[in-house]
Amino acid sequence: MEKQDYNNFLNELGITDNDITRMMNDNIYYDSTRNYDDLEIMDSIIDGKGLFATNNLKLGSKWLASFKNCKYPCGRIINHSPNPNCKFIFEGDLVFCILLDDIVKGDELLVNYRDNINIDMIDDYKKSKSIELFDSKVPSVADWENSSPVDKIEYELSTLPVAELPLTHIFTDGLYVRKAFAPAGSMFTTVHHNTEHPFILISGTTEVISNEGSGSISGPFMGITKKGTRRVVYAVTDAVYLTIHANPDNLTDPDEIIRRITIPVENPLMDSEDPRFNTWKKNISNSQIVSTNNIN
Image (tube, rainbow, N blue to C red; front, side):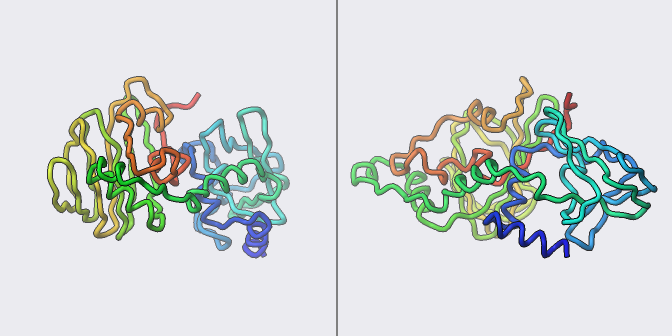
C-alpha cells in the first residue's frame, strides 16, 4: 500500500524516484552519526532503508531531522505512508520529526510525503532538467578554425545524449575533496586548473588526453594535476575519481571553490550558458554534500 501510494504521489507531481533522489542529495550535508537516539537504520520492506524503533517510544518523542542544509537520519532515511506515525515540524532553520502515536520496538517510522511537498523546489528542479532540451550552438567556420582540439571534442560531446556523472562534495577542516563517478562509456572534459593538487582514480580504467600527452590509467592510481592543465577523459569501465584541494577559508559552496581554483574556460564553439558546459556546478550535476565539520 505504501509503495503504490508513493508511486501515485510521484505521478501526480510528474517526477520519478530518481528525481526525488537527486533533489534530496542536491547541496545537502548528510550526517548519519547524530540525532537518532532509540532508532536504527535497517532494511525496509517498503523501500530500501528505513528507521526503526529500538525501544518502545511514546507519543511526542522528537528528533532533529535537519538544520539548514544538514540532514540527519530522520530527515534523510524515512519512508512514506498515507497512514504515518510521525510528522515534521518546522521551526525556522530547524526541522524536527515528532511521533504522532506510541510505537513499539521494531516499528518503522513513517511520514506522509504529501504533507511536506515543496512545489517551488520541484519547479526549480524541472527547470534544471532543461539541460536535456538545450540546443547546441552552431559554430562559425572562424570559431572552428580558432578552437583547440579539446574545444572541438567538447563541442562534439555536447551534441550527444547527456550522461549522469554524480558528484560528492566532501568538506573537512581545511580541505575540499571532490568525488566523481563516471559510468562506463561516458566521456567528459575537465575544467582548466590553476592550482597543483593530487587526484586519485579509486577504481576503474580511463583513457586520458591532456596537453601533457595521452594514456590509459587504472585504479587504484594517484597522480598530480599541474597548473594550466585540462583533460578529456573516457571511462572504459565504471570509474571513481577523487580530487583533493586546499580550502583554507573552509568554504562550503563547491561552486565558489571551483571558481577560485580554476581558470574560466572560453570555448568559442559552445554557448557559455549551455548546462553541458557547466556540469561542474552543483545544481547541474547530481550532487551530494558531506561534511565532517561541526554544524552550529
